Length: 318
Image (cartoon, rainbow, N blue to C red; front, side, top):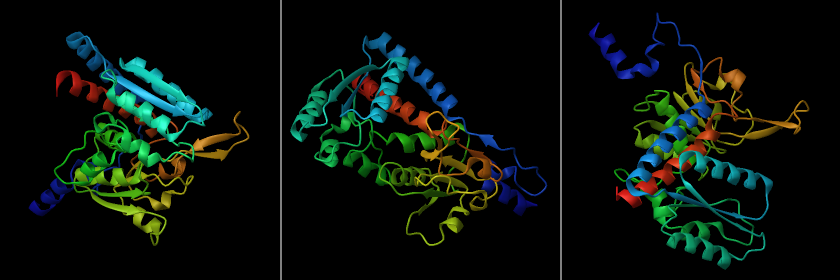
């Protein structure tokens, strides 16, 4: 009896309801949109308090190069969310033909502006501009996207905390926290190894004491590796590649993928799906984010969180 009791205590609440004799928990959709709205309200309350104390609000500057429709839409969404959160919004729109030196000057001006606490340069940039040079030019104190080499370096080191964590991976961890998913001691698999999501997500899971595997394009038998996961973060950019047979019973899935697939029934001629087949994996998993409405709203919410924290550091010297 003592052995069984110790076993239950070790595996924790995450799988407690899946022990023999217990009915498995019903599948839960992880509603990223609703959670992001809750976070927006929390930030708005904090920013109202900050303004009452200091008379000031944090500022986010967004720089966009060229006239890509998807980038413009995303920037407009960020401006709207800034207003909801009580964050001042600044912007600079530059032509596709802007030189690298001209773009660097814009970044340097925002670096020097005391009203700006976060700088985001919308990617991708035109081919004649070196993205790494532009991202390095952003002050580490205003790197709310979390991609400055010093922030990423701190993320890699045990016992060090970066000033900012990349927004999408941070949103993934926030979803797990808000859903009460224990990460310590669990086997987490990250499907994908991009600099934007996969690698920082794996590092964040390690910081939460998960045992982490990264599955990538050269992994032998990726299905078998994914099937070992208690927690799966799918971010490989392959439409609905993950099926029910890939998923361990009761696993928790964060699906970062946003893939367009043809759909004649839609006005646009396509619909968005994740890297997981949601209808399939929901038969086996205990929780999963939908696409859309899962990780996407959380990415913008975490951008607001990073900007709010940067403003509080500056104004309250936190």
